[in-house]
Image (cartoon, rainbow over all chains, first blue to last red):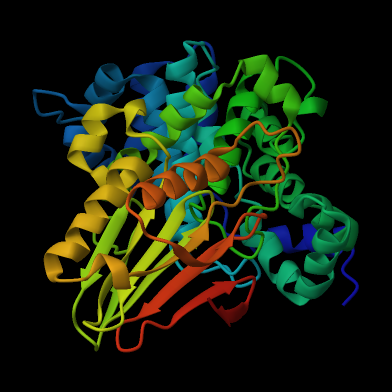
Amino acid sequence: MNSRPQDILARLKDVPALPTGSARILQQIQAPDADIPNLARLIEYEAGLTANILRLANSAYYGCSRTIGSVREAIVRLGTQRISELIVSVSVAPMIQQPLKGYDLPAGDLWIHSAAVAIAARELQATLGVNAPDCLFTAALLHDIGKIVLGGFVETNAESIAALVAAENLSFETAEQRVLGVDHAEVGATLLEMWNLPPAIVEIVRWHHRPESFPGDPLAVDIVHVADVLCVNSGIGTGRDGLSYRPAECSASRLGITVHTSETVVSRLLGGIDTLKDLFMPGTGR
Amino acid sequence: MNQIVGIADMKVSNSRDDVLVTYSLGSCVGLSLYDPVTCIGGIIHCMLPLSKIDAAKAQENPMMFTDTGVTTFLQAVFNLGAERSRLVAKVAGCSSVLDDKGLFKIGERNYTVLKKIMWKNNILIAAEDIGGNASRTLTLFMNTGRTTIRSGGSEREL
């Protein structure tokens, strides 16, 4: 099959929109003059989202001693950043939990990988003692969202992509680019644009395999890149693409990554993933 | 019965009906041990080479680290009745991303630590499928000690 990038991008319209007005709420949250009562009203229009926010806000993970009874209280107590993480996590979890044939990922594995990268990004930020933008966790969670669209095309072209990776020692996304004309990072960024997510998140997703080309302050994209490398390297949620990704030296050196930093972050992955799994995927196994 | 060995986990068995399997070994090290006379053995899947990175974590789950994990694993198969001199040890994993500059050498370090421990314990490594940039699945059949590696869509004996 000769897929052209425009055929692939045309498939984006088949992906369910970010459900229940979440995108509109996220836009509001990112606005510098975000108005809490207004935000709470927007969220309360969405019954499912409201229930999830209250459930999560009252979970041990967020460690509040007193019961949170309203969305407004949840926003005040957890802060808008945590609330936006919750909204994105709740909204995309069912989409990235599906099996992905093209990437050979059984149900749940893309979610595990995404959660692992989000945890790793947060741990890297803490270990390095840097102040990354608020959208770091959300961008990390969404970094591979393009795979849900590109999976079918990768499946049809699996042999050519694998052959190219093997013959030229290419990184998997470079082989996707060569065979399909577009890679999962670009497809993901385009999808998030369609969902009207904030540009800061869209650009991190777009450049997460090529942080050297990132336009602007690269701190967050460097963290997501290294977090992704550490999770792929550890084999967490890897599929057909295996470990065929190339770490960018510029990110490692800008962040000052040492063996100790990377091993510290990896040692904290499993506990973090279990917590997120309990929160967002109650009742799932493996 | 199929027994899945998770990440930072081990399973030991003396039941010939068991098949032990561990998925997605990247930089992690997978080690299978098998005593062909008693049909006792197991698999461990360790993430990181040295427990000194987080002593509290190592205490809570020694299997996360190759140094504490492999020692615990050996003790567990001995406790079940395996004989050191008969143990057949096979290793898989220790791979890496396309890390031309050697920035993330966790797999290589896992392998070095494993070899040291096996040498100290006088156990030879009978077979290994390590390194490169593959993600591997290691399976041990407890009835015969047969081990297989599945990687990149194909399966082979180890």
